Every structure is written in C-alpha cells, then in structure tokens.
Length: 382
Image (cartoon, rainbow, N blue to C red; front, side, top):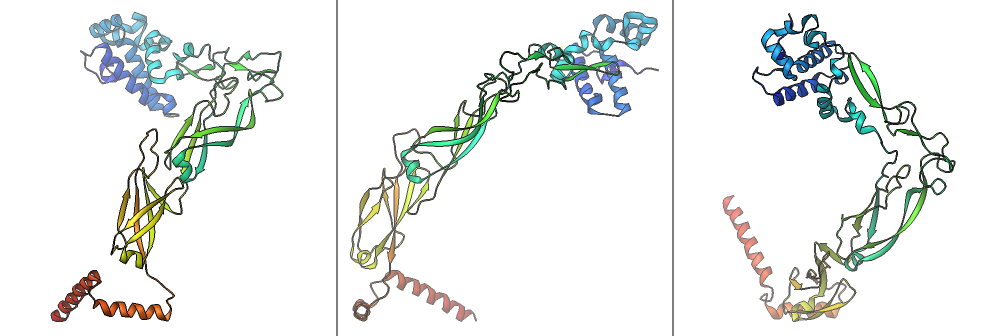
C-alpha cells in the first residue's frame, strides 16, 4: 500500500502551502540523485517526495486526495499521483527547483539565455616594502606587475578580425544542456562552451581566442603618509584584463614597513633609545635625539639621570593616516659606563668613591640591603 503523502513529506494534514513547499525543499535536497549517486533507496525516496508534492501542492488534487485517498488517482483520475509520468516537468516543480538548485535545475534555462561570454579578470596581489621614513611622509612608487591586457588585434573579442563568436551549437547559445535522469529533466553546464553560450570558430591568432594577452605593466602608485605595516590598498580596475572583453579585476597592494635602526613604531608613536655618558647623567646636561623627518631635538638631562628614564616629545611621532595630527616620540635614556680607562681616570674614580662614602648611589645601597636581608632569612631558616 502506498504511503500517506502527508507522512512522506513529514507534515500535518492541516499544513498550508508554504509548509508543504518547505518540507519538499528539504527532502529534495537530501535525496536528490546527484547528491546520492548510485543510491537506489535515495532515488526511490526522492520520487516518492515528488509524487507527494505534486498532489499536495495542487489544491484540486489535494482536495481529492483528502476525500478519496490514493483511489482518487487510479485509472488516470486527476492526471496525477501514481500515474505521474511527466508530472515532474509541471510548473509546480519548476519554482521549487529554481529555489533549491538555482541554474542547476530546469528553472535555470531561462536565466541562462543571453548569457555573455565576457568574464571579469582576476584580482592581483603585489607585496610592496617601504621604509619607515616613506611611511611617515608618503611616497609615489613605480611598480611592475605581470598581468594581462585586452588583445589589440581582436579588441578583446577573442575572434579573428572580420569574424564574430557564434552561438554554441550544442546548447543553442543558452550555456546549459538538459539530461534525462529517471523522469526528471536536469540541466548542466554545456561541455562545449563551458557555459558561455558562444564558441569561437576562428580564434584570434594573437591571443588564441582568449581576448587578452600576457604583458607586464608599470604603474605609478601613491602610498599615503601614515600607512602601517600590513596595510592593504585596493586599486580598482588595475588587475588582469577580463576574458573576451570582460571588465578588469582589481590590484591589491600589501604594504610592509621595514624595521628602522633607530626607531621602533607602535601605532602613531615612536620610541628611541639615546645613550648618555655617565658624567652627563650624573651632572646633568643636554643630549640630542634624532627625529623621523631627519631633524634633531635637544633633551635636557637632569642631574642623577638613570637608565630607563623616559621623555615624551609631543607631536614628534608618526604621521597618522588621513589625519593632520601626529603621534608622539618617547626617548629613553641609556646611561653608558666608561670603558678603556687610563690609570689616571681609574685613580680619579677611586677618589670619587672614597669621597662619597657610598652615599652617592642610594639605589645600589638599597638593593644590597634587601639582598642582605634575604640571605639572613635563609641562614636563620637553615
């Protein structure tokens, strides 16, 4: 005995047309033969779902089925149900298959008509390395990229001058062909024209029918001030030429900023270490620090300055992208201990230490006091 159509679709008898269509969509996706090649059970269930949907999606057939059951369609009654025949080609199915499979099923044929053979060109990627100073000020750079351009001989059509592309004889210019699968008509991409709908009987000798030729191009690109490492810049229409007169793709510049020997960057701010002689750090004085644009800035070093002491120079950092404001520069002192001392210098340093009596280095003394306390604790614990 044939299974109840409502049970086949897994719906209540009170289900409306939207629920019926939704249930069929899910089952058709699940059991479609193309998704289950060689699975006879899936093919059987797919046919059962189609049979149930054809009846329940039609108001008159559904009313007859609700009243008489499968008997309503015996002996050719209502033209459906068990005697489905070509029922799958009916309008009840085409809209569902368009939604489910797009161009893949029968509804796609109409959308394929008038298909253009032109295709958009591929996007290109170019890695561009610049210095930190160039990132600060911005730069105009010429780059050479391997690309493709529209063929001059055929003007991008792909056909030898004086000829034109012709409609594909296999698909009639639609770009798709139909194949019978059981009692379903399934559409696929035309194998002759690869879905283009056209073939070139007399291809251009310069581009072999592609409508484009390989060629290096030199471009002048503007890198704006303030770009950071990893910035991506899109140049619309500077990619590869399209196929057979199609639009150009885009070019993407990926900017990398080289490390600098003096500065480290953190967003809009710069960091710079400045080495200071021990005497200058002890007595105070002035030192010069470089700026990113090549200038100099004077820093006043206070008496007793220590390594790690920082100074903030406002507005001396990096240019900010698409903004007038600049970041700041942070200068960190590195006190340098003298080396390669002469005998006289050593003698003077010993006199300096003796004169101070150990009171001129409070941090060292404080550290030694803490260390001594630590050692005493360990000794007592032992």
